[in-house]
Image (cartoon, rainbow, N blue to C red):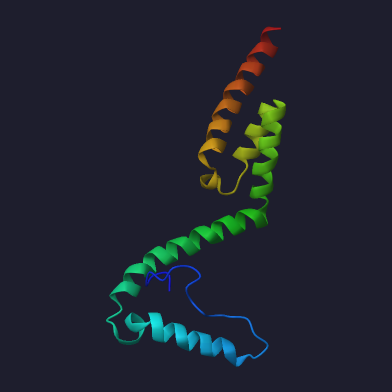
Length: 128
C-alpha cells in the first residue's frame, strides 16, 4: 500500500475484531479501493518500489541486529561516558561496534572529539 501512495491509516486492514473473517473482509475492501495497480496494472509501480522496500528492510534488519549484538547498548553507554569525560573508554566502545556505519552524525562527532581529548590526555600524562 505504501508503494501505491496510500496514506498511513487509510486502509481498513487488518482491523481488529473477534471475528477472524473480518481481517479478510478488510483486506478485500482495501484491494478493491486501492489495489487497481495490483489487480490489473502492469506492476510498474510495485516493481519500482521493490528496491526501495528491500533497502528499507535491510536497514531495519541492521538496526535490529545492532541491538542483538550489543551495539545499541554500547552506543548508549558511550554517550554516558562522553558526558563524564571518559574519552578513552568512549573511543574503545565505539571502535568495537560491529556496524559502525549506524553511528549518527552526533555520535561520529563525539567519537572525533573523544579521540582528540583522549590523545591530549595521554600526551599530558606523559609530560607530567
